[in-house]
Length: 226
Image (cartoon, rainbow, N blue to C red; front, side):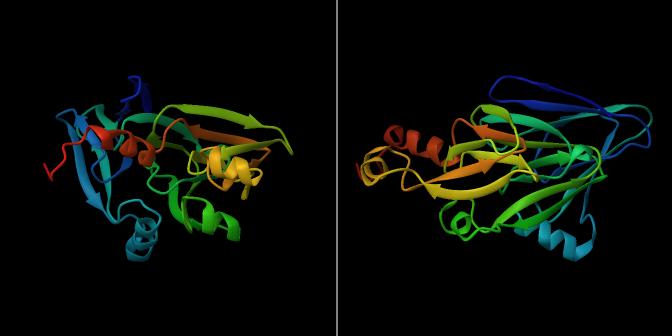
């Protein structure tokens, strides 16, 4: 498999497959494909795996792509204005915010993972369930806004605004801590809690969440009461 990520804040991942290679994506992710690419909806891993995958935010049925008669190309796009990031899962498992999974090679396992910290469950903004990517091969994730990728040293911490943590290696610990004093919590614009990520490992931070984008558009929407 060969691939390229093109575009700026409305990106494509263009995946080229050779005969006997396969690729899977979330349902609805395909933007285009060459005429000799075959697509087929499959409940990869069986019913239980499909149900667990759907609980994590991915689709119950994945779409399988396979070339027919030579190499073929499929292009995937994210569901919101934002970035696409490639992950080499063979170097270690990743945890991804719900709905972050876009597509992967068939050797990548997509399943749900539960938050381990009570504070993260109650105040983390992503809820109880995350997506876990494990196995081998390349996976692609997408989210709103631009991305900042940081590699944390052992013990190094980043405090990230709630819901702006897109993904992190499983070696990174994830918890919720107070944003600061009462005045900071009330007037700082970040709420009472922030996400604390502790290394070692990579983290992916988004500049804008989908909720931020939706809120920014509200003043420009027509008023139905008028």
